Image: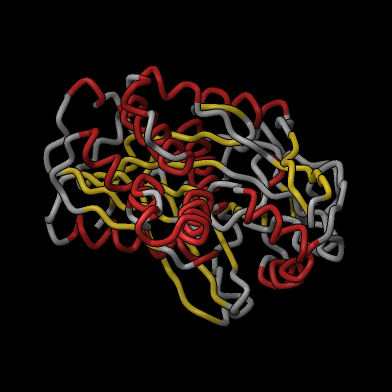
Length: 364
């Protein structure tokens, strides 16, 4: 069963909305800032791709956002942008709409704030607001409540395979007829805790850009953001983007499994040296693109790749990979502004436990 992608909502280091994402793709640049940390009392700064959720007040009154944490705000903004992009936001209550969220770490900032309040003030005085927002499904719940979605809602957390796993859930809901539409989204926040863990693992590299296809170089820069797709069983391709053909997950992907060399292969390589060689082996002699230098390294990066792939299929042309580094393995890096040779684009993501996700979109 083909599933139509009707709308896309994105927010990341490149900006807010499809228009700003497209502008960043054409310019090949994104806004990189910093995250300030404390290392045993000493101030520390690392480069990062941060997000701005200020546009959320266009959809939700400021008073209603007072008790909502940053993770849920990212999810709400992505959700509203996807519905607006699809032209269905004015419908009001979203009958038979399911919500499924993918996240590698969940609401880590508010979760550890709750633990701090528990440790500092005891179980009786621990913050109930922090507790409510720390529940892993809180973002999906906020979205469902504010949109009036009457379908099921769920959150999938499988680290770097969260996105393809959550997509499989969305496909299942649609194929079973549980809902008419699914609002699929991926959300990640760069909390102080995640930044500190990143620093402990990778150090304080000051790389000027991510060079994802230089597989022997460590150039990863952490990021945060949200990417949402409005999925439907109905083939509304006239006003939509493309179709979701297949979602394959597993472990130990063999070279040559990606059978069609004409299809553009979007790699989830994000400058982490330990995974670079694996991408090089699997993408050998393929036509590839990589866009992580626009939004940074995070577990839900594949969702941004899907949004970009959907935009390429809608416009029928490629975007140039936005980095200056060369590709150090035998592959063809797609040039920007060229017509897509095939009507299919595949997105490949790899996880640290030899897992993989391969998602294919088509024009239909």
